[in-house]
Length: 334
Image (cartoon, rainbow, N blue to C red; front, side):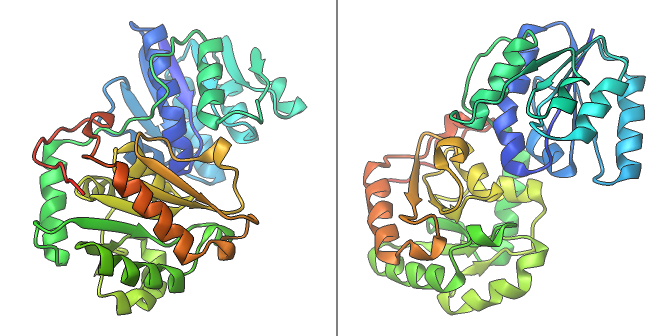
């Protein structure tokens, strides 16, 4: 039996879907589980013990046609589309030839392409919606907390890369991701610069700025913080491994912040226009700083410092149980 899971494109979405993918494997332990996802999704799901094959879907018509053809060649008996609104993924599921197709009844037209649908619960966190859909499809829910699977080799390579960027491998490394693909979610580099300066008066650490190649030019505006710059220097998979060496992570509602939370890093997440009840990072050591007005500019540096102090006061050590690596030497007391 072949079971196929179709995911969304973005990092946070794939992380939220990950527990549902695992539940499909628990519900169909003898099935061959394949996942159709984006290149970012593949980086998130690499090394996953429950996935037999990951198929990459390019974000264009040619990519959709190739993905649909490839999925149909797999002859899946059951397909689950985890996108609440994608017509492309719904059509892909329909054209797969599978007799059992599950998806969300978010749009009337999409419902016609599935054999069974689930109404999206707008009051619940998205991870719970994905788990409910997987359960409808016969999955067995084992956990709600997303996981990432990082090998020792990846971590060691990441450590060497970080040293090459300027880290001595000894001082606590605190990660920052000031960017977002949605401008309204950004707090502003001036706020991050001021925050880092205040933090350096209270704690001894090495700040490191993460980001993709597109943010390289804007990242230079943070040069006054004397931080290590990893912007544009790491692939997504390398970034994931690099974050495992961080002792603290601060960022907005973005993929990197979700990754840090899932990895068990003490994480401070800044939220403005998005609802944290539905989209908050999932981890055991996460603090959310919410704008009082939904505008990121209304989050003060003082408020952020206060919440960070609270977060660190509760941290005894990093929670390494949330991902596929373990290193007892990487516990840091505050």
